[in-house]
Image (tube, rainbow, N blue to C red):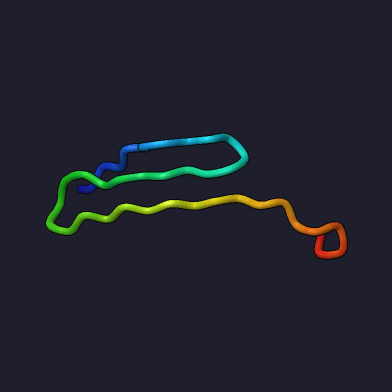
Length: 40
């Protein structure tokens, strides 16, 4: 079973994570951006 550690989190802007355990390491990031008024 993989466990995930949050490396950095800025609410409403980004989150960065790192996996631990298992044979394969998976790191990732997600960023959040406000849509333009005509796309909402």
